[in-house]
Image 1 (tube, rainbow, N blue to C red):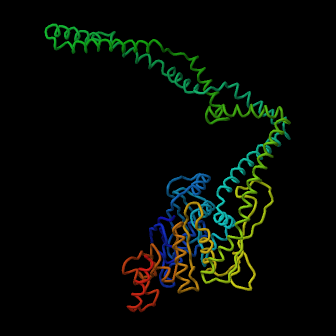
Image 2: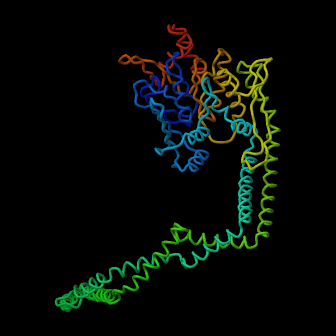
Image 3: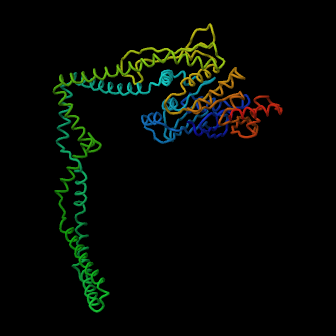
Length: 555
């Protein structure tokens, strides 16, 4: 879901920031007021093609920022791209008048292809300038699966694809090793000997570093110990001597005044603690002595450990893991035929498991394709497209590798008018038809599982009015129970059903045209819907009609 959208220097927008809530949000305004600019901004955030023509004249750069709620599919894309994770995701897109652009996710530089992948999970834009979702090759299959409720089967196929892929790669690696078995065995033998000669042990390096530090400062340690020993007990007027005098004095006080007994005991305890400290200082001074040979041994050992870590690390744990892996691979290559036989059986079993899972998914898709086509056509009939035809086409793909979404692709064929042949969606010219088709498809699959996205409809109301417009508005509001819906509209019946109503306006500031967008409520919203009903001059009857529309929408 889109939480916030900020735009600077996009076409006639100078500086704009909007906050969105769940539900249905509409954007209205007179023609040319800048309504489509919001659609352009969302498309840029979804990885759409940037153009220098979008940059406001005289500006150094265009900046669009969007804050979206994050979910598991989004976090999977972020993890794969090595980008930060969080409950929200901040996407920024910049363009200059020279056509140079940059993209950022959570203030980290990101490739446009990453924005495209994120956009597929975050938004679906449909309208006169975009077929962003329905032209996406993966979208028809995902929408069919949503209608057919195939999540369990799709998950099973994904898991089976991973297992088969892992087994296939392991088999291919072993076959490649067999082709160059002698050289590979020689390499593995060298690695094992090199690591074993270093005799790596967990925790050894830390102990050696500690010993080296002590030996390197042996003279300082001895001097410090001797100084502490002298101050505590062996010099004239030492702490032990003075504390002894104090202890005897407190003992005499206690013999006179029993209340001083506790102080006398404390003095005796201090004498014992001073004696312990003195013993520790003596041990420190006597236990260390300069040993250049031992220091050299430590340096040599540490350098040997460092070399093996540089080559097989970075940590000692990694070195030991590499040793175990090299030994295992060497053992496998030594008995290559047995290993190949085992790997081939594993790959075959995983392939059969994948095929069974894919067959179950295919069966459910095939069963649902006709019902989905009929459900979409039924939705279209209520959107002033009674004669439109819609069909889902499934096509099997060659099983060259394990595909996590199954063994077929899906496509949508559409004929908006009788007597016309069905065509792929990318060959349908009318943005209004495409918008209503997407609305019909979304409505047919509205009870799907999954996380909410932001659906953007531009020109969904083209060529409709009256009862049909009300039906479109109700379908949009129904969709908004599952997904956030943003709709650019000229139809008052749709605007009246919105949870949020934004108005786009043009103003002249210092001889420049600037588009502004603000949220409407109360009397302002009534006045805007009345304008949509009546035009520039708004009679009282239009205001009453607008108020009635809003009251009816509230019910």
